[in-house]
Image 1 (cartoon, rainbow, N blue to C red):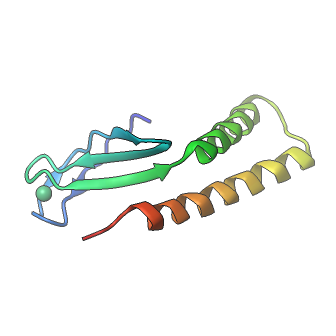
Image 2 (cartoon, rainbow, N blue to C red; image 1 turned 90 degrees about the horizontal axis):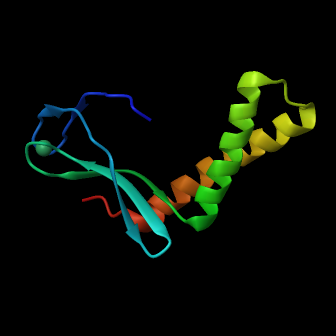
Length: 100
Ligand SMILES: [Zn+2]
């Protein structure tokens, strides 16, 4: 992921270009960036071992879809995987992010 988006810090109001970093705590991995001006941390995502494994599984389907046509069954599996990953990511956010 190399997209550069301008973000507006909701703490100091400055616009900045985020440079995502990751931090590991046991099997939990946080992806975040800090405001260039006030240093406030914004958490992008929280993943655990199982979620990262499922994200990689989904990426394989997404990758193959670029070069070949997936069967209906594979598309179904990929769609369910994506849905489950999003659900789990939202769950982990709630569990691990304490937003002030
Ligand atoms: Zn700021």
